Length: 477
Image (cartoon, rainbow, N blue to C red):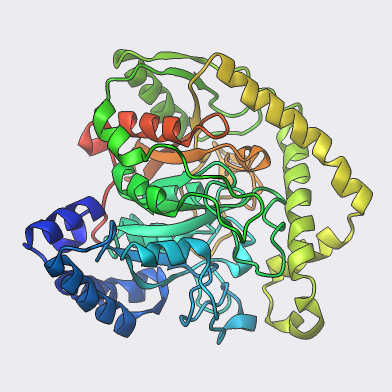
């Protein structure tokens, strides 16, 4: 097996047996990045010298026998997340030369565990939309079809993992930004329960990541790798007033212990009662549900009632998102208007029109969605849906423009992920197959609040039972 094909778990086994060194691995992956990244544009800043130095230090720790739990494992960090001493632009011309003076907690914990940051990955400006392109670096291309986009806003991270540039990547998710690109790129992406991983990227505003709920999370090619990263970075932090205490158990040992023997009660919705879903995606989704039944699961329709049609729901969620975006980004309009992307400016302008009374009033519907979704878990262990209603769009476009011959809004109508950002429940995207044109299809799964372990168990159960040919892994561009 070539190094680029190895998972984080594979690398750690090689390090323990002294059959590979971190230096060799890092050098090999930078060679692959140098070859593929000019076309993919997944990485926007490389951390070459520091990474090689840390690899040498990691090699010494392995030889001494005091290596950390992720020692020598390469990781990519999204360009929205602060990395001390390493350029972090937030995808914006305004911050094209910015070098943070502190690490976000998730980065600090990865470094403390011995992980090696290879670089920063592409994102839309301030993560404001579900497609990955910006005026500073341009678009990221999908490894499975270079004419296509990756989704966003963690599109660079998902593309890097899918192309074998790195086994693990960090993403953040405020409307689907981990799940959307993970689905399009055929990898596994996990959004934890809100607060499970401290969110402290904005040093001046520790409360901004509630409008809607924004979470950090792992992107990987296997559930076990994502769990490995999750175990390292989860747990309360003093810089985040909403962060949760560490789980009493680590996820990784539980995945090995259960070994796919569980029997799940699965509730499903093909469309949340409002989305137009591509017929081929719908077919793959229902075929997967049939497989679940043959594996012993109870599979029944969930009683999902959003109380809004798609246009009403999109207006609601976009309004909520834009209010938060305006509060955090409006100040840039004064001195940097010409450097900001037009889609970002448009969202800020629309958010300016909201009143405090309107914003507080929006919590009534949000409360309804919370009770409605959380109430499903009286009957079910997990809920599932397609992650996306469509899987193909050009890398320079804002999203697909039609589904099943019907026109849609490319900025919103194909991403079925945002309801779970209203509630903060754990959610993930699991690869379940391919379209006839060879594009990956993902299934979204979400669980009751705080049950991150249960959702990991379900994802591992799916992965363990699926035929390897249905699981997207690495696309060699």
